[in-house]
Length: 119
Image (cartoon, rainbow, N blue to C red; front, side, top):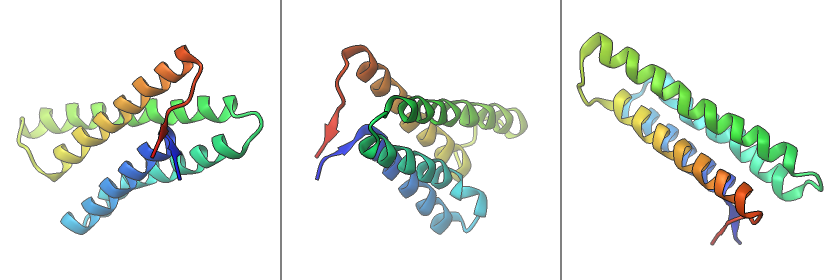
């Protein structure tokens, strides 16, 4: 069953969050999973709604927040401890990459007028 790019990004974020919780046992590691759950709901709404544009824009807003939040966290962490690669820095960089790539795909979908289906 093919899924849209929103659902694919959501699955990646959920896996990142759950993996972070198992790896570090810190509840804050689940933050990417929360973003993923919101994107998953919006991705399902995009597929099932007759007026999917509204949900696409909401998903893009969540993706933008998923880019801005890790940038803020990385600036704070690097300012406090310097550039030390730990689980928090890794999770923020990966979440930034997933959400940034999602926004690029979303922009391409808006520009081309067609949705990408991932098999």
